[in-house]
Length: 252
Ligand code: MF3
Ligand code: CO
Image (cartoon, rainbow, N blue to C red; front, side):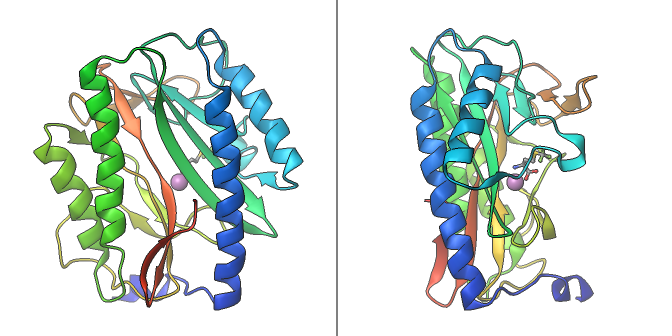
């Protein structure tokens, strides 16, 4: 009950700013996606993204966050989230998750997509399709009067029905004046439970879906999260506003 009071309701003016922050971010991520090609390193992708962020006159939200060293998190195949850009070379058949956040006029937007490179195995294609769809199932529940557990449950039910597993160790979050605000948004849960959703709440919903088991481990770099069984994982994220008219995806 008390927890609900911590979820900040944004004013209409704040929502306008957040929508612009989302538009700009979606535009940047589109450019990053079209720069992906076989043979590029994840560091080169990050360097190009840093330029694009500068050209839009916004700031990277992740760089420096708890000491994170880059603009993007780039997580390939068995990497789940928080992959640090480096010497890894992108090859045909890879699935590459690009996670990016920006700050625009002191407001944050956050977004991730997973992209297939070259020829994808059908089961990899299915993992991407199911994870993207799971995100949209969750977004559809982000309505005034629903409970957060309805969002979480919709994501979990869809992904598990398709034979995949939901990562437990990392969750989505409220967003706005900070990258991470209350509430935490698990991608698993029970319908009808958790905080009541109200117009003006802004949520970063971000399912991480594994082909094998849900367990993860963090590498010695302190950031890169991989699946415990080394099977592939996908990640999609949107920043979404709860409004009187229903859920509005800000990052598009
Ligand atoms: N989308 C991720 C999140 O919301 C990315 C954070 S990366 C970090 O947690 F470097 F900023 F931590
Ligand atoms: Co996020």
